[in-house]
Length: 172
Image 1 (cartoon, one colour):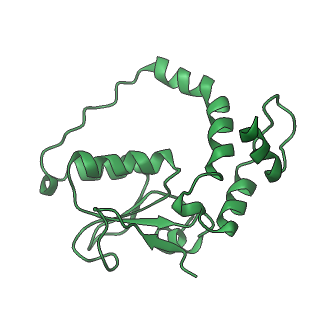
Image 2 (cartoon, rainbow, N blue to C red):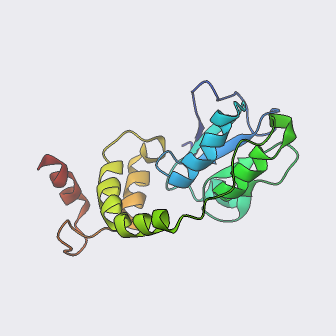
């Protein structure tokens, strides 16, 4: 069965890495992958988008030695992980125009907001990811792997619920 699938959007291209355009290996649910995808759109960079199954350890391990996303693969270069490294690499490459992004603001209030709100955001997001048609969770094994890898407490702090209970929260 396929473990990584090429996206079908306008940015996707036939074939594999090395077809002349960079490839981005990603998960749709991953905020770091979204960060890496944004620079392609901002700079209008043609690219291939490869969705990896969430339980696919082999593809990212073969590329960078561990299960991690996003991964940028540019022809003739070693695959590159880490979203901000990818963004910087593409933004600063003159082949795709002048840099567009400004340096990080360093705003501590935004960091504090994220730290304070993450527990609630995690509960809201992770319990719903398995309910929507994301490419990386298309197969049952990938959904089961996601639930196992991302345990969450119940809404009132009770111990981790069983996956069947996750569905009941959406019914309320």
